[in-house]
Length: 209
Image (cartoon, rainbow, N blue to C red; front, side, top):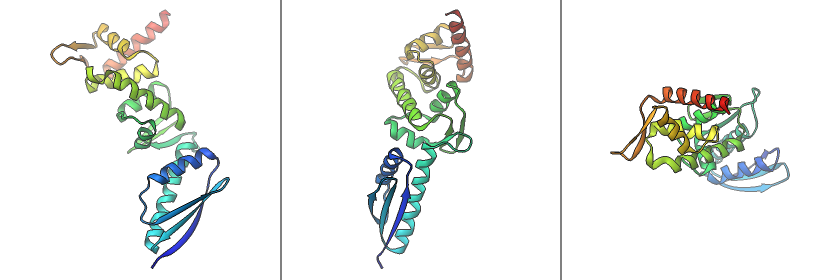
């Protein structure tokens, strides 16, 4: 038996409304929905069987909670978002370790819970960061191994240094080498050690300036 229910979603501003509508359009819901936007709210007309309506409303509230968690800080001043949401919004593909490392190097508060990043960096800035990481990654992807990328990409973006300059510095410091047989740069030491020594060298360079 078909039924109908209307729910109201309250939003703080146009940014929240846009983000929520974006997420809503991605949802494949079992029920038919019709959305009527008002100034600070959205009226959502949900039609289908009772079970379809119940499931649709659950998922609508779920995405609204997700949107609010990424746009507004919690009591600790931290934002919550998924890696997938970040990548989709930035229109790129970057590994979680690279994103995490970049946030650390920028001095942001950071926690990783399953696929959720909890950080002090606001959503729009996080999207911009991931976009930059993606650009740097695509610039050096063909000539580097995965391990060395996890050092070069976050350092390049966090310190605003050209990725090729970071690669050259790693080679100068004896932390990486160019492998002619593979046409790739690769690390000579493990990535944690390489990163630590590279950062020390960069701090030394900054002191000299």
